[in-house]
Image (cartoon, rainbow, N blue to C red; front, side, top):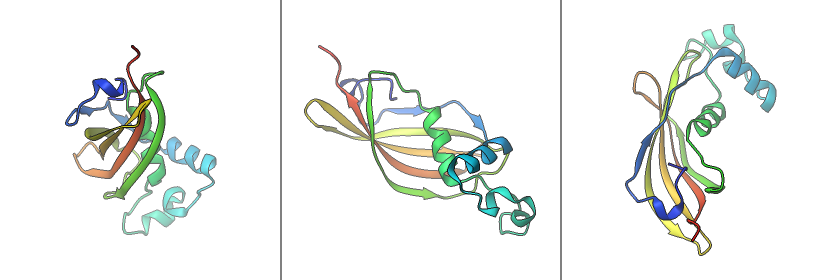
Length: 144
């Protein structure tokens, strides 16, 4: 979806990403990188006593992994423009396989570039929506 210029994208366009399984290594590496060692993510015994019964992936890890699953073409994407209405609606556990379903909701011409608004749903292997968000991405226009 982000491999097309602003002029080539239409409201209503949809895309489904490849899958990606969340591992224990993902959680540990994200905790080390971010400094977020909250026990729900990193302490197996603590998490076992929680409402989830096991460790839960960081929400920001889930969003970061999703970003990597969306094909982006160099020279097309200008910049990440923003994110709105972010909700974590189901936990992501070690061993869950996530994919992204996206739909273009809006386009705004900004002169030298354009901004697309994309509804993103991150789903697990059971079809449960783990995260929803509206992404705004600045895209180059197609060269003349």
